[in-house]
Amino acid sequence: MTHWILTAKSTARVDDRYHEIGRLDASGIDPQKIRQPSDLAGVVMRTDSSPIAVGELFDIESIEATEDIVTIHPGPHLLDRIGAAADRQRAGIRGGTIHICGNAGDLLGHRMRRGQIIVDGNVAAHCGAAMIAGTILVAGTVGPAPMDAARRGTFITSRKPSLPPRCFTRGVSVDAVFASILARGLPGGPSRNLIEKIIQNGAVTSRGDQSVGGKAEILWPNQSS
Amino acid sequence: MTADRHQSETERPIANPQIDPNNDTKPTPNADSPRGPIVIHGVVVEPEFAEAFDMTATAIIITAIDRYWLDRAAAAMTGFGTSVIGCKIEIAIDHYLEPSQTPDRRVGVRILAFANDHQTLDKNIAARIAQCVLTCPTAAAYAGIDPTDQARQKQIAMGKSVRYFGDGYQISKKIDGRHYWRIPVMDGEFICQHTTASTAGIGGGNFFIIAGSSASACLAAKAAVESIDQIPDVVTPFPGGTTRSGTKIGSKYGGLLASTNHAFCPTLRGMDFSLLCDDEHSVLEIVIDGLTSQAVAAAMRAGIVAACQSVGFDGGLRRISAGNYGGKLGKHHFHLHEILR
Image 1 (cartoon, rainbow over the protein chains, first blue to last red):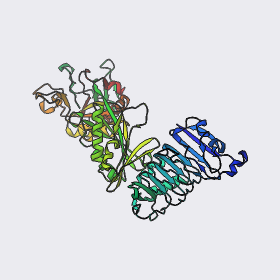
Image 2 (image 1 turned 60 degrees about the vertical axis):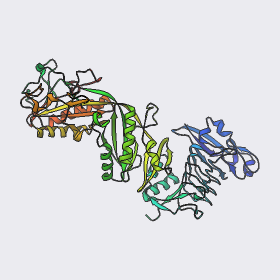
Image 3 (image 1 turned 135 degrees about the horizontal axis):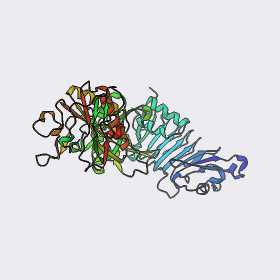
């Protein structure tokens, strides 16, 4: 098991393409498919302009760990489709943890199958869309249509997200004992603080997406406590 | 537990064991035998040995919202689990856990369970989790032996079996390499780890408290068990950690695996072969199961010393002995004198 740490290279160290890049597709980064640094460095992040590899944008470090983890310190550009199903793939990540120390783009965790995605910052639209299972934790704000068409899985966020009517159940207060277990594997920082808040105050949970027969759950801290 | 002693009349204990004049709290050798008998507070510890057996063991951690519900869950989980003879498994509380020591930061208790084979343990633990912990308000169940430990390949089902109660609404989570189930119940959700690991254990460590009265025997047994409770990785599964119904193998009635250990029954003295002296009117047996032989030996030592110190010969405690089958059945022999020296 390896903990891979990706740190965005300073703009001074990359070529001009870096400045031309729009948004990046990170669906090729799968914690359980990386065996050596070249596996990760060679992952192509498709862009609107031209393909660019992970190794061109990020410095890569690795340390031994008890589980497969990828920690990403993103640069100024948003990474879309983190942990999501890549082209021609039925599912996104199937295990391990992806930890984003910053903001994330659209379709985070789209069709993810297992594992955890932790975002210390904000996420854009369609977070957890069509999620099959796993856990997404977002410490910041959440863009439109989270958990759209989600089947199963857990989405934990800092406040009640805007959900389409009749697709998710009304929020119910719960004692989130489960959050205490989740906290054990979390690094310190905004995500850990969110979980600690839930442990302390309890949570509100909503289930859906009922439009697809989904049993996924969305949890946020109980503000009334 | 059984205690079929093969002692001849000539090996019977002396009626009035020598009293240590110093009333020392430490085991005191006496020059009467090659290495000397051991006398603690005037109580003779016989040169006997406890014969114990290989068992399959596991550990479970139960947590709950507070000590009240924790005790209810633990009592239910460990109920009717005194002896493999009649209960299939032997199960009891090892020790309580502070919130900082449990997976979900609530008060907890570590329970140890022992059975003759893995299959029996697996079946009974799953049933007890389902009937005793799943049912108890706020309770949760976790592995007491890390199931991800590569050295421990055999697993005991917990949530693996109970999850089906969720009727499709159960949620599977893998966190930090460990697999949990969240099962919706009427007070929220029951959290249960997928499996716990099994390990080799030892069942049947024991010693006899032989006293002049039931009151003295009970006092000594209570002190012994309280002392044993401080030793990790051991349990005393009988009521109060003690049994009055020590057994011998077999019976005059066909089909009974065990029957009363008549040689230690004071009311049968004079009717049949007896191992009791005239002034010995009550015998209690402390039975100890443990995860290692070191733990069982430490528990026996702690229990014997505590029993002797708390009651002593003056308080009515007469002898300490142990139960065995002549050393032919169990491969673990805990010699009382070796343990105490």
